[in-house]
Amino acid sequence: MVRLLFILCWTIITVSAWGQQGPKSFVGGEKITYHAYYNWHFVWLDAAEVVFTANDIVVNDEPGYYFKAVATSHPKYDFIYRVRDKFKAKTLKQDLTPVWFRRELKHRKKSSVHEYKFANEKNQIYSEIKRFKSEAFKDTLQLQKGMHDILSAAYYARELDFSNRKINEQIPFKLIIDNEHSESYLRYLGKEVVKTRKKRKFRCIKFSAYLIKGDFFKGGESMTIWVTDDANRIPIQVKTDVLIGSVKAIFVDAENLKHPIEAEIIKLK
Image 1: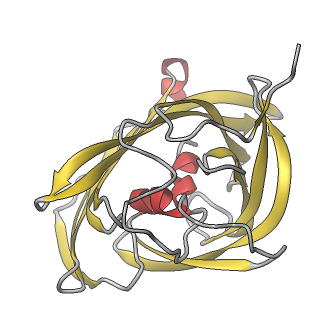
Image 2: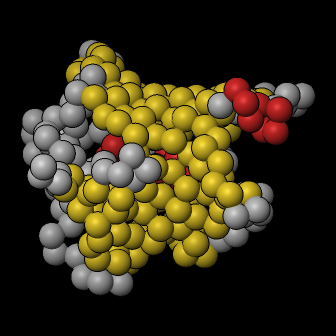
């Protein structure tokens, strides 16, 4: 169920123009929290919490970022599906070029680790994958232009300019995931107002995302995403159908944002 939050990292990826001063939508120290809900027999269960953080570091003697996303199922649901997942990434600060990525999954008693090192000067990715009760597997993949790991892509995407998008316009993106190149797209659907479970309202940009069919997702344009229509571009809500039921991720809180959340609609007393 908590995989939904990490599909936020797939949502709005394409090529955008960058300045020379680094990202405009976030700064080091930012922290964003989500709750993940699973629909079970017409009941929405608050099943997990996911926290995204961005911090300043030095990467290869250059200013960089260390991104981290941690997913934890609530203890009362651990007996159904215990999850302790961590996604980590390092990038250069100026243009968010990926340098390193690590994914640690712990579901019930099973675990796996995926690690990628980006040799940008050689246009190669060195991967190492260790799955539950299996020997570690190492590989070398081609690094395509504009390719990101799943976590750095989520932050890179927040730099995009949506002002000239047309309704139903497709936005292509590409990732390295599960030791393979993945190409997909988003479809711009316009703007809507979204209410969270905390009864907060936000003006949002709306998309659908094309998903590749697998063990969890049905495939096709079965996911819908809403991000704030302001300078922060924070994902506020994500909904998708899965093989059994459906899943929803909802924004809870944010700390140390670079900009005020101007997309929030405040009701005057």
